[in-house]
Image (cartoon, rainbow, N blue to C red; front, side, top):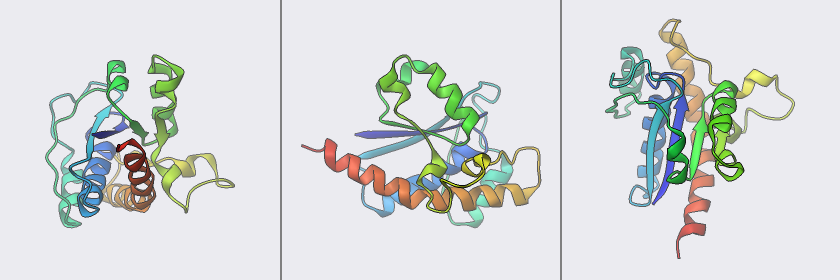
Length: 167
């Protein structure tokens, strides 16, 4: 099983959204028996809570299923994960600092690094999925657009990795 974990700050907005969207892509590609998708937060403030109601509303309006309970990312998880997807550069730095080895740190990537519209020559925060928590529903809709834009590229990378891991 190839394991992917999306990580944001509190695991109630961006990462559960990315988890739901990417799980739908994995299922659509027929890889749900070979790829496990989940999410977590860098902090534990919301552990046990469901996703933010605005996240749920935006996902449901777009036709995505979601069932979620927030949890905090743990350094011990690196051993069982193949890919850790950070939603912004702050999470990327926090996760790489938490990684127990250079090999574990190399598993951490920014979600938007898989989006062809984001990348070299862009302003640095163009690689981040902005935190919609303190804003309006528009921010959650923008978050969904950014997650959806990066998901096909991430799926291609995961599909290649699954082929390489399959005997």
